[in-house]
Amino acid sequence: MTQPKVGIIMGSQSDWPTMKLAAEILDELGIAYEAKIVSAHRTPDRLWDYGKSAAARGLQVIIAGAGGAAHLPGMMASKTRIPVVGVPVQTRALSGVDSLYSIVQMPKGFPVATMAIGNAGAANAGLMAAGILALQDPELAERLDAWRETLSASIPDEPQDD
Ligand code: RP5
Image (cartoon, rainbow, N blue to C red):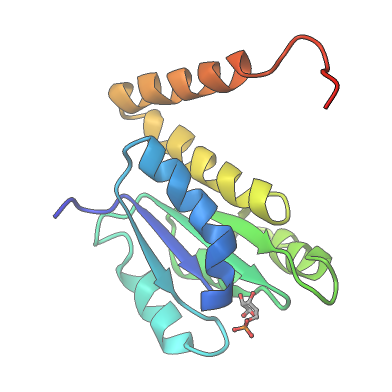
């Protein structure tokens, strides 16, 4: 089995419909990853063990998504030096602004690279992880450049009527 380079973690099964958009980007770019449910509040020991072992297991980027009182990305950043990319999951009660504020306002010393709320943020987290890995992987860099060119080429010059 290929050693995962990216860990996708999320606070709940209910985050997966959002977080799988990060996984889909990694699939498209041929990046090995794992996906796990790790809750800051419901499974704190799992969070602790994951952060403690992440570097030794060869992970190079962690994408962490959570909603509401979204402490998972920040707590993971406090437990490992591996870059953590945070995804604020959209919530029903407060539309994900709660998640965003919970993730983005980290104290000096423990950064989380915070993405946009919801689906765009999850997909961009996959692309951010790819960009970090591509710095040391020329073949991945080529695939990422091609992915970006394809996206640009798909944007029409002019708007169309429906
Ligand atoms: C957070 O609480 C999770 O990340 C999720 O976004 C939110 C709601 O979780 P569930 O009640 O749906 O399991 O910890």
